[in-house]
Length: 144
Image 1 (cartoon, rainbow, N blue to C red):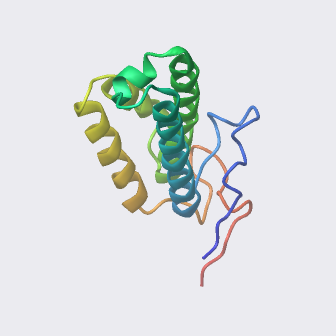
Image 2: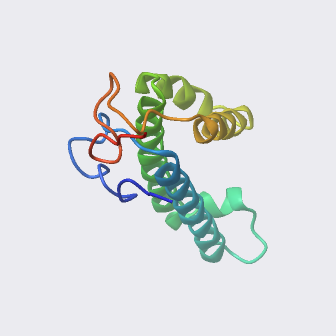
C-alpha cells in the first residue's frame, strides 16, 4: 500500500485548496478527524455537571472552545475532501455544496457521510497528472 504523501502534507501551506489527495491518505485523515471530534465531545461531557446531555455540556463555558475546535477540524476536513475531489477529476468547488448541506441537522451528516464514502470508492487519477495538478505520488508512475 502506497500512501503517496503524508496525511498532514498540504494542510498548513498555500496548497491547502489546490493539492490532490489519494484514497489511502483521505481515509487516514477521516479516521483521525472522527477520533479528534469524538475526543472533543467526550471532553465536553467531562466539563459538564453530572447527568448533563451533550447539548447542555456544549452550552457551558468550555463548550464554546470545544465548538470552535470542532469547526476548525471540519474546515480542514472540507479542504481534504476538496483535495480528494480533484484527484478523482471533479472540481473541489463541489465541496461548497456539501458544506451548505452540513449545516442542516441530520441531513447534513448523512450527506457528508455519503459524499465521503463516494469519494473513498472512486478510483482517482493518482497515476498521472490531471487538469487539477500533478500526481499525488509526486511523479509520473508508468504502469506497463
